[in-house]
Length: 214
Length: 214
Image (tube, rainbow over the protein chains, first blue to last red):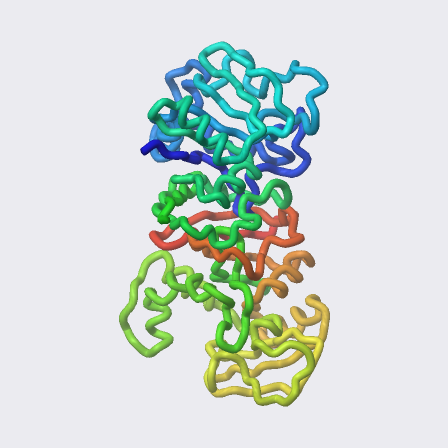
């Protein structure tokens, strides 16, 4: 059975996965880049820049595992870009340049659809105004037997969690305070239907994995 | 210089230091007792029951350190008991029985004062309707050169943090979700004037220590 998986969501000690005032200059909000300091040190991150350097170890293992067996990606519109409301034009093509790091069909949930956008390297962005269930159906179809990954952001993850559609979720708890921003644990309660299945520490972060029980 | 210290505050992954609906049957709110599972296993906890058993190690070390060099304690009224508003009588003597685990002057911050309450074993509860600064002055005086400890709860800790009066704060992050309750990180922002000075993992929890920088 194909799964919907969430991986490597960096969350501050006070529960934020992005800082306040996200915008073109601040994709992760004020202070939010610090959430990813643990990533930059890894071999995984260095290899994305074409270098064979960087640290191996627990953090690198989690980053690598996040890509394994994934055939499609889902993200919220606020993760795709800083534009809110209707598209004035179709010039915005995401944060990731010509060759986004997905390399497969990537579904952007939005109330404002636009034509599918094929990029270099195999990524095609599809803009879908559908329920989480329907988006997931399309993603599983595109993944063709592989798993689908829910990339973020906060609002999209909460929607899928509340619908019980996420099979596995991995967070990296970063020991910093952001003070404000996008909270993951809003209106989720104790996350019924999920249990914390593993807690693994690296020197930089605490990796917590949730698994669906129901 | 004597310090004001906060120790061994157990906080859930979603940021709560007590569950919802605290009351006589549920001093830590619904689900809140699970915040202290890591404590019960330790030698520190067993010794409070008069036994020489229990685990040593990181968790035990933090619990022991929390009592070292402390000459007075401060707590909020909601930590002292479940009664809100004026006292109908003075029968409530705290959660801890005849011999509370403080063994020194313990200042309960409340808008509703009552006569000081001497207990067995050296604890005397004083009920004070004063600013954090003045309560701290009285606690330092009672501690007679030793440090003062701010025991909780959430609201009292936030008041002293916002006033910049806490010198050190140690939290134990417990990998559970409470879903609702008393949040520590409310209206604290990034806690200006403090830095995270250490992060230490045990198999059960992550110990995070904040130190005043200013």
